[in-house]
Length: 320
Image 1 (cartoon, rainbow, N blue to C red):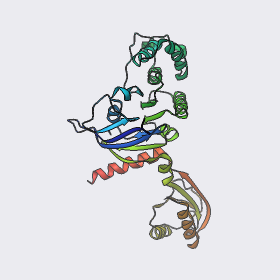
Image 2 (cartoon, rainbow, N blue to C red):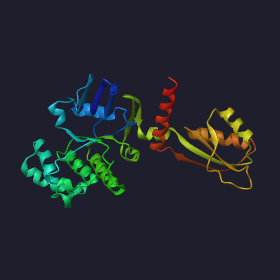
Image 3 (cartoon, rainbow, N blue to C red):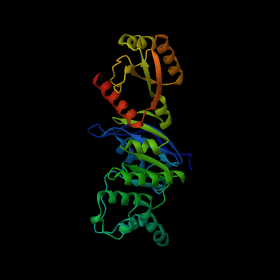
């Protein structure tokens, strides 16, 4: 099989209303966890549906482990949890999972061993013989996860897998996905819960209006910008203007500055990309006669990155 779990080349889906995907190209390696982000209506679910073979692309091509998307060979490797799902309410949870197992061609002896274990793993083992109509939304989402994993897939596509779960449930799902990752299962995670992407994923992409605008390793995205704080004394507003002019950096007085009798003691904040810039700014602060009391930093979290990115795209769109 191919070394890539997913290879999409210029995948495009056109609709009459214009929404869809345009020339989306990505490669996801075997065993990788990939996060797919974007605002509502960005085209994320459309792209996933093309990859799993539920809709046909208008143009472009794609493969899963070297097999053409939509082919029986590709589908046999997939586990899929859609964002919107409905299960047969008159069946028990165990019967629903067994139905999915048989659709995958699983033998009865394998079903009997696999299904109870899987129901326990997703947290509904004690309710496996209850009818689905008595399940809460969170329990139905757990059931959907069991259905997605019943065939022990090589790649799992998850569309908002934790949206209906409470914090404990989200932690349990995260644990399940982490175990899958450790076993070498490829994970394609489409989620608005950015903490899940930050914790689980190796790489990610940002989709907006059907087009991938940014992508890369999660660690690189988060390390690219850090918010540094400098606690200084002897500060005057004119010094802030001077620092901005000298450095070309966005420097501001922190909103977290404590009120005190000495109004010249403040926290300055700056978005910096390297520790060399930190040393440079330290030197400039001291050279201007300010006292440097403390320096600290906080890595930009994925949620902050996402909000800044989407906000920037919105502002840019207003001027185009």
